[in-house]
Length: 124
Image (cartoon, rainbow, N blue to C red; front, side, top):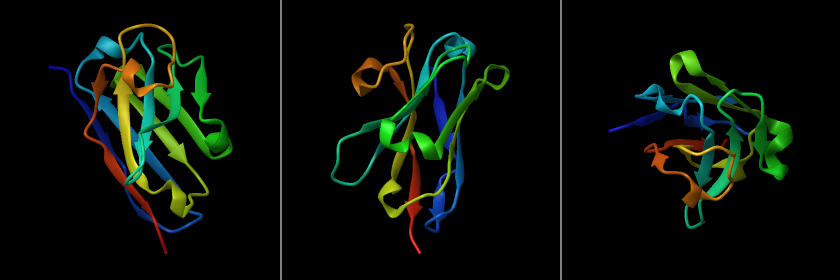
């Protein structure tokens, strides 16, 4: 069974930064897109950012693009999400997702594998 394990969440003050990590238990995803989603309490899960297997293409939620950077290290079977200028409305559980078909997708149901999530809370 393939596992995705996120880390790096926590409590941060408004304006602060965080770096989330997601490590896969298998190199099976190194040629496929992976993505970050988030889900705030009482809201639907939404796409945050995605990256293709070769890390040559990144897609961001338009409203978040200026504050995010997604990257990956296939040697470590990992993807990362750098978040800057964090706001209280960024508070959510952040999930790593993987799929075994080409093409970065923004719909959650396009992804077959999910991590358990890491909580990000932005508050003073």
